[in-house]
Image 1 (tube, one colour):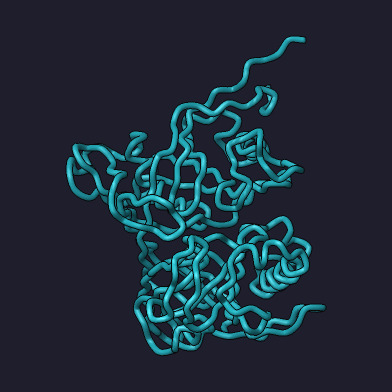
Image 2 (cartoon, one colour):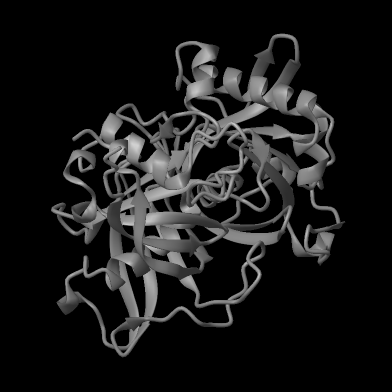
Length: 397
């Protein structure tokens, strides 16, 4: 048997926010994978270790959770006023597909540091000491993200005292600004795809629920926790170990996706696991986070739990945090009402791992709500760099 050597591809394994993923420069990918399509998907699936019927991703770089089954491709940008283009792939764990339908807000925090360290940002634009501003074109959703990355002696600073609930160790703070995060569309009404701040969502066999359907950061369906039988203080084990609950929540997500116009048939939701997200909200109340840390009702404006790739997320997806901040800034949404109503420029919410603050600027213009930006802080760190290896047969000869 003549065995071909494995492909050896430059890559960096990074934590960004509460997620981890494998980062590539576009130019370092094998030629067949430099364009979207089956070859690229096949490569990333093999890198991450999917599909895995054991749901462990033992033979790849994935961590067998939605937060750790991710890949990122970054390249220099030819777009005016942008430094790099960033493409995110959510890799399914047990199925052979990569979902390109949305962004990862957590890994967005690692794009700026990766771009700087990989030589993708023009060195003349970078300060030797201080804060480097990296303008990122998020190619999945066609939006701009501005990352402010601390540097010293021309190098990215990773150590620091910024603490992020859901991440064990402190690190340097990276501020992310999501510019014009809502998808308004040509008619100015797409941020709320039905035109309503609160809809009535009918889910056959499950029930009928008030819902806020919003396209901001990532398409998200918000429900009241109490309406679906939850308190809003649940941790992962309360939901992820209950197959019947997961099936009900997925049915709600599928019908919400249909109502938002993201799919033409509920069956399509199974092939679009990354978007939309499903989250449920509740007014502030004290609870104990997954780390054992107490979260006091007086320290938060509301509680939020969110589903990601069919499971309750251990903390909060960054893009969902943008949706939370945006919806909280608009009086009358379920998120805003759970936070006490009224106008607000920022919100601090409780999630399974602790708390997170996100700000958003919203205004009413010609009868439509417009959100100009959302801001939050994350951190990032290189965990390993070098090369990933995959069998040569992964790609066509």
